[in-house]
Length: 367
Image (cartoon, rainbow, N blue to C red; front, side, top):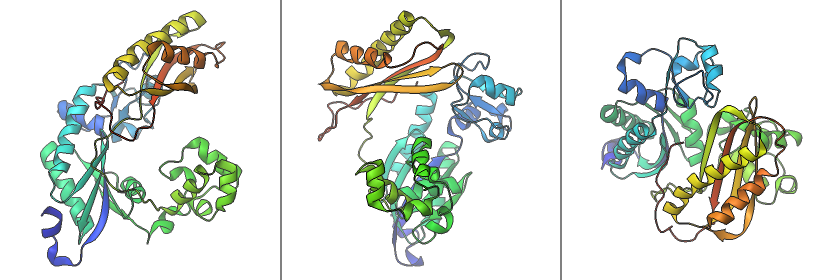
């Protein structure tokens, strides 16, 4: 009884959610594979050649000290830190390391584990000392995998997720209803899990710039401005409340996507169309493996120098027909102004909502 017995003498049990977030995960895996890189700035992205187009998948903390961040162009990263070690993405290695970590978490007694991705998971626990339990989890992961993680402790999933950010690196931090507004109230709305740049701008246009302001906002006003479902949901985010439960049901992706960065700009509309067709063909392999019908197709275009736009649409009816999916992708492409050079193309297929499990689980695929 890992969480129950270990602290049974310390007092009554408390239900808490832990958010386990592996520190600098991909870079940390690479340092384990190449111990000589310990203490050096390490950047992982593309094929490891910073003179080529590509973006940073992750950078270790040393590299981040030079201002290198995920999704930054590799060419920008090498300008900021010419002495950094650049490595190619090795998805299989990261997936294997992730499985080791998740196996450690699942081995804990009386704990419900919900995997969120390669490097993070929720754990539902009952413990008299949740922070001590979190440190036990941290120690077990380190002992078994030699990887550090930060752990957020919360009374909701939202608070646990944000708490792990306060815990980084290699720490444990608790965020609950009692200290929510003290810590989060003055922060910008974009600090909330689920609110991105575009949404924060819409909220700012309504005069709502901080978490406090959003939490106190009028729900009918938000519903009218942002939608009857979205508006009230955003206000709930600002309160830190979340009625979702930690579930150990296998993760089922909402869709699949493929994208490609081109070393030479695409300028010919016919060539752009052919490259999109090629991406759709590659995407269909994942869709056939998954087996679920597609209801929406989205195309992503990144123009030179680094402006990204998306267009897409819902299909007349869900389908697995490649001809229909490709036609929808080409129609989405037609919504772009292709008068500018293109450095990246992407296509994503999103599945129809289902009330029962899909016939087969889709494999995790690296990009």
